[in-house]
Length: 391
Image 1 (cartoon, rainbow, N blue to C red):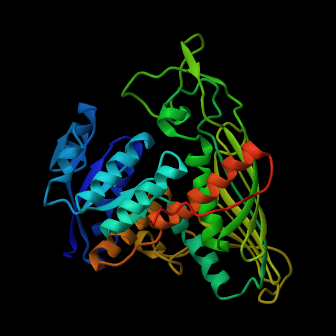
Image 2 (cartoon, rainbow, N blue to C red):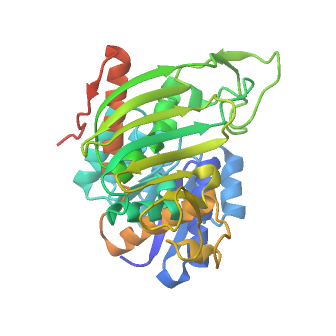
């Protein structure tokens, strides 16, 4: 395939705009790849967003009907950043139309929907990608390298979490993210998906879980349709509606490798702002990373260090992709730079006509763990992780 890749993006809210900036940045920061993402068309039901996309982001055209994008020969990739409830219909139709597909997590509104989407894309031969952008932090990539080199020894413990501030404000709007019928599950889909993905990326498959959930904020102010994001807030006395999916999920997990761990996520907690983080321990060392300090890694390799205890490693141009954004050590990159790396790696796979990671298969592996957590909520017991793959 040509290195000019036509993009059709469906959904132009905050995440759709982040994806669009990422595509635009690839020729700027990664000119050596020769990749030229072409922003062919945008689909959104809000006219103001279509105008923003075509006027300010460089999309060539826009429409309120996402189906129009599927029949266009100049679109190679359909990028899905629409609300979760739309993912299955769009992704299955895109696969049937012969498009490659990138979809923000969670791929499906619930685990079984992810299985349907993965099957459709696999049978169509689509190259797929999923928005697990935290994988691409240079210090996470370095941790993975150390694991693969055996420098932590045999891994024994893993603690993963994602504590996010977006639902902490009790006046935060009742956006689609807080509704079971629009978002599916709450933090299980929204941020536990990231925690599961990071755990399985670093430590391998999770095979057994026991899990609990809770809704801490049971009512929220109603939003104005088409305006704002899930970070916006209402006022005291505004009309409210019920929150119908969970604020909190916690789990004990067992990995196939024998590692034991915990995963915990919350959108309503006070204190952390966006703490997507992990700590891991092995027989020869340990490491810890937190997205709130994404350019820093806490590292403990006693056989390699002159002194005992954790040291702080600062990211820089010696580590994966970092030098394309800024030279030297200790000069920080940010969240949207991770989205640019994510888009880069996906489009490289499309251009080279090869599988991408993370793909819909990875999303399905993560959804299979999430499904076991749901079963554990109901049984109040340990549950085996069973693949949801549909053959």
